Amino acid sequence: MLVLKFGGTSVGSPERIKALKNLVIDNNSKIVVLSAMSGTTNALVEIANCFYKKKDAEAFQQIADLEKKYVETIQELFVNPTHFKQSLDFITCQFNYLKSFSSNTFGNSEEKAILAQGELLSTTLFSNYLNETGINCVLLPALNFMRITENEEPDTNFIKENLTKELAQHNNCKLFITQGYICRNSFGEIDNLKRGGSDYSASLIGAAVNAEEIQIWTDIDGMHNNDPRIVDNTKPIAQLSFDEAAELAYFGAKILHPSSVLPAKTNNIPVRLKNTMQPEAKGTLISTHSSGKGIKAIAAKDNITAIKIKSGRMLLAYGFLRKVFEIFEAYKTPIDMITTSEVAVSVTIDETKYLNEIIDELKNYGIVEIDKDLSIICVVGDFIAESKGYALKIFDALQNIPIRMISYGGSMHNVSMLVNTSDKKEALISLNNKLF
Ligand code: ASP
Ligand code: MG
Image (cartoon, rainbow, N blue to C red; front, top):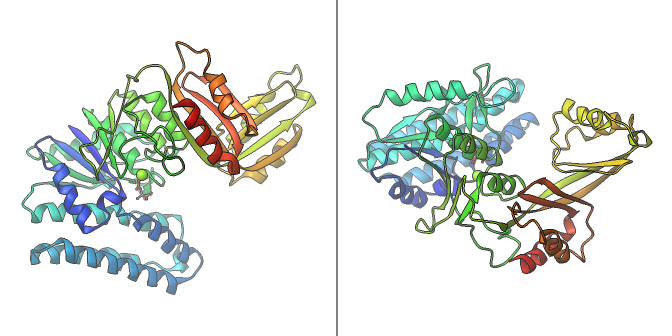
C-alpha cells in the first residue's frame, strides 16, 4: 500500500483536480490524502474569526463568497448532470451547515467544525470526479479513524484499529481517498492536527497501514538546500536521513510538516517529496540512509523570541535549569535553542502566547531580558565522521553578521545560529555562497 498526500495547490482548481486524476490511477493500491483547496482553510479561519468577533453579517458574506467559488469549480469540473447535481447538493448541504452558525453560541468546538469543511469538500469533489470519469474509488471518512488523545497526541492504536476496519470493508478496492488534517478528539468532537497537518495525517496513515512509501506531493520539486524564496539557484536534495529531514522541517523548510517525520521514522517507512507540477522530477527521498557526510542544507525560522535569565544563583548550583524549564513546561511552550554560561542561560521560543506569564515567573530566578524579531538559521547535514572544519566554514560565511546565540553539538545533524531577522537574507545568501 502507498500513501499519497496532495496539498492545497494540487487540488486548487478544476484543472489541478483533473491533472491529479492522472497521478493516482496507476495499478498500485493506495490511500490518497487530500488537503483543502488552496485558500479554503484561510477563508474558514476568517469566517470563524468573524463569529468570534460577533460580526455575523460579515461571516455570512464570506461564506457566500466561498460557496460561489465552489459552485464555479464544479461547473467546470463535471459534465455529467448526475455527478454535477450530486456535487452541488453536497456543497449546498455543507454551506447550509456553515450558515447555521451564530456568534451567540460560538466557541472552540464550533470553530473546529468549521475548519473541517475544507477537507470534507475537496475529498468529496475529487471522488465524485473520479466516479464521473469511471474510476472506482472509496471515500474513507477520516473522522471515523483519525483521533487524538487528551494530550493532543495521535491515538495510534485507535487509528490503526479503525482504519484497518474501514479498509477491510472494501476488499476489492485499490484506490482510497481520505481527508488530511481533520480528526476527532478524546471527547469524540471534531478537531484537527493544526495548520499544515495533512502531511501529519498522511504519515500517521502510512504508519497505521505499514505503507511501502509515504509520498508528499506539493508544488516544489523536493526539499531544497536553501530557502528558494530568498536565495537564487537553490537545488533539490535527492536524499536525506529522517533526522536531517526532521531538523530541516522544524527549522523552516516549509515543504513538510515537522511532526510527520516521526511516525515514518519509527516505522521505517520512506517518505518521498514530489512535485505535482513536475511529476517526473526526482524530488527528495527521506529514509534511514542519508547521502553521505557533510553539509546538506540551510533553513531559517522566523518570529523567534530569545529569553535570557541571568542569575548569580546559577553559579556552581545544580537544579537551576530544571526550575527554569519547569516554567516553560507549565505553559506548554516548547524551547527551540538553548545556550548556557556559568551565570546565564538563553533560550528561544516561537510560541509567545504566555510570554508575559513566563517572564513573571522567571523573574523569581534572576534578571530576565527579552529580544524579539529574531531568526534561527539552521545548517543541516551529517557531521559525524569528519567533524573538523564545518564550524569554521559556517562562521566564516557569517563574519559580518551579529550572532546572538550559537548551538552546536546538540545533535550531529544541526548547527543553529540566532540572528536578527533583518540580517537573515544576507546570512542565507552568504552561507549559500560559501557552503555550496
Ligand atoms: N488545510 C489545512 C491547512 O491549510 C491542512 C493542510 O493543508 O495541511 O492548514
Ligand atoms: Mg502543507
